Length: 420
Ligand SMILES: [Zn+2]
Image (cartoon, rainbow, N blue to C red; front, side, top):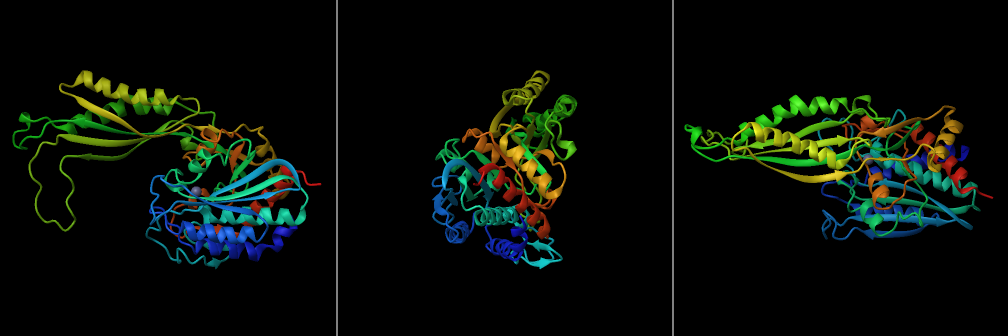
């Protein structure tokens, strides 16, 4: 894989070009532009390239169309296909930058910018790996695919989910998937925990704040709900440990975040100088973000929340509530003996002379759609960059890390596609 060392400048330039196309999501800007850039690059290397719009998916509009690019290169003989999937969207810039977020500045062996780490550096590494492989092994069995997909940061519905629905990740078409998310060059990410989001609302009755006994305070009802969660649910969640090798360690159990709480009158604009009015709140809402384990069942997760609410209902008069599910993702974990895992593990050994660490992500990524819709179990996340850098100011990716992980990807292409 010395050839990849010789492609260092190309890898840097490619990463910089990708970072300089600001594909912010939301709202989903410049998807078409980055897909055309990738199409031109890969078509010039002999790939067949398709642009597919996730029409009618959340956020898709004529102003912000959800474009995806899929490139395929057929070997000289029919065989298995290795697919590299990267998301093309990046999150909001935020404050605190000392570098240009869309400048792609190269400094001390690092490329800076929004999306360098998550995950345009990984996308660039996979392209360089595939191109190097095709130069070394023009006669190979099988096929290589590279996709750049929309909206991972907002659930992936206009990207991988849409393509999976259309059969692009069916086991007949694709047999191995590597998602170059920034999990670190010496770690193999087997999957992720599950997600259950719900909105809980308590109901009350509005009245004058000087006579609260004439109304019913929804915020006090919610207070009782939160108290019950602290007393019974949180200790229960802390007891649920998993066999999944989740990193960081703190996420190796069930967790629940309370994302937001709203009750009573709406907050006023910051320039509003008046006083609030005295009203008993008739509604209070929280959004909970429960992350669950492969050992748990999603219906039990929902039931635990309902048990909290029913317990409170037995304790309080006039307690009324609604619980509305917002979002669910089933946990996913690829078998350690799956071919893509053993192949990448071997390549990490060859390139870096060490055993890989096997990890599971605390949050989800596009593997969920490949698993659930595509029915493809032979999928991992493997790519350069530090997970802790994702979504941060002065986000960067190390050039040496990209080189090493491109070598691992190239090496595992050789292993999986068995060139003549
Ligand atoms: Zn990502």
